[in-house]
Image (cartoon, rainbow, N blue to C red; front, side):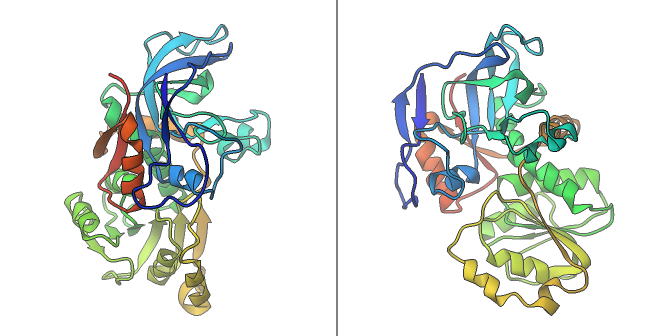
Length: 343
């Protein structure tokens, strides 16, 4: 099979083609697994975190990709959840122990033995992937493969982030950064909290324009002050500076939810500007998002179909994965980037 592999780690330089198109053996499913022929795979900032070593794979080479849509090709001997030709989605959570407190409470994303698709095991930048059947999800027919792919991570992590804000209808919501996840969260918030105005902070005017098109009541630069203080803000950026701006713009007792698996080091010195009275006092809260649980993905897919939610996508061929990653690194973003791998 054809696959894009990551051979080594380090900073990704402008225009660099780090991933290498390779002929790779088709994996064989174990008795509790399914073999999936991949049709589409979303491109996520977490791939940059892997490539640049912020969340490094335990072994190389590895095939990245964890927003996967495909059809079941082979069913393992002990699998009853799926049949051949069923369409399934595969997200960041590949497996967990199933026995610890976190797994038993539905927070398997916090399991100490958690394995991530496309980091700890080979992922979806390939023509085939195997996955435990319990980590695959039926995908509502209302979505095309390209539309469905970003729902497996950008959408599901946005769902978890929005839930962790504790937002109530009528309260104000802020979104810092307006890429794949935030443009889905905006649509979700409009459905779940119709009386809650949404404010968007983004460096790029194209992103701000896109946010206004989708219904944001206000969109400004990361350091701009909105017309009013905000109850809850979700930060989806890889930078530190937006955290300080978000904390400044929170109301007393407001909550900042940081939706990022890692933050980059280049502007970390911004934290030295942290001022307790301005940024943290009056019972403001900061909460991080680890990743998504299986329950998050299942619930979100049902909600997305009910809205129905539409992810805007930019499509690339598998062998153009490096171009997609370079655009993501350069913040050339409108919606989500998706690799189209097979029909």
